[in-house]
Length: 179
Image (cartoon, rainbow, N blue to C red):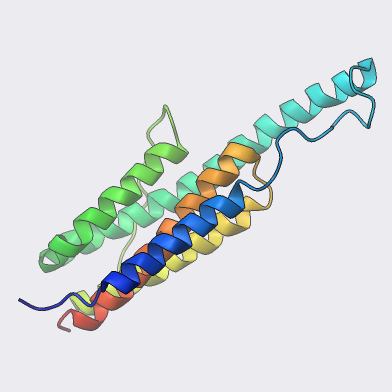
C-alpha cells in the first residue's frame, strides 16, 4: 500500500490553520455602536434600520457570488470524476465537502451547477486543475470577507480555509497520481 503523502504533522498543521482562521474571523464585535454615539435616539434607530436593510442586501449579493464560485467548483469535481473515475477514491470526500459548503452558503435553495470543462488529458493534470480551482475559490471567499457581515464572514472564512486545505491535499495527490 502506497503512502498518500499526508502525514500526521501535515494534518495537524492544516487543522491548526483552520482553527486560527476561525478564531480570527470571530474577533470582531457585532455590538458596535451604530447610532453615532447616541443610543436610543430616533435618528440612531433610523440609521440602524437603514444599515440593517443594506446589510441584508449586501449579504444576499455576497451569498450569490459565493454560491456561483462554489457551484463552479463542484461542477469541476463532477467533471473530473466523470472523466477520470480512477480518482474517485481521493476526490469523492472533497467533492462531498464542497457540496456541503454549497448547501451552507445557499440555505433553502439549490444552486444550479455551472459547467466546467477540464483541459487536462490525464488524471494528474485534472487534479492539478482542481487544486488551482480550490486556490482560486479560497481567494474569492477571502475577498468577499471584507464586505461580509458577522455570521457570513465567519462562514466564508471557514470555507476559504477548507478550500486552502483541499488545494494542499489535491497538490499532494497530483504528485502521486500517474500521468
